[in-house]
Amino acid sequence: MSTFEISLNGERTATQAATLQGLLLERGYDLKNAFACAVNSGFVPRPLWPERSLQSGDKIDVVTPITGG
Image 1 (cartoon, one colour):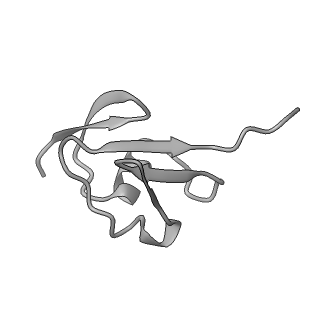
Image 2 (cartoon, helix red, strand yellow):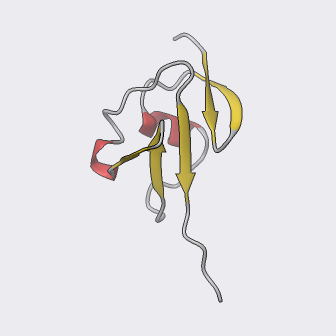
């Protein structure tokens, strides 16, 4: 597998993950938790995470809910 650079939550990082779900697993996200993802400012529904391919230069945002008041 080749390594390429993406932006994850504003930080440049290298990855070998071919898909959004692969990236999330690579970075230690628990897929059972509540959070949302966007690639290049476009929301990606959870059922599409396994098939959403990534490319060098993609901007991925992972947003988690904030609890408390």
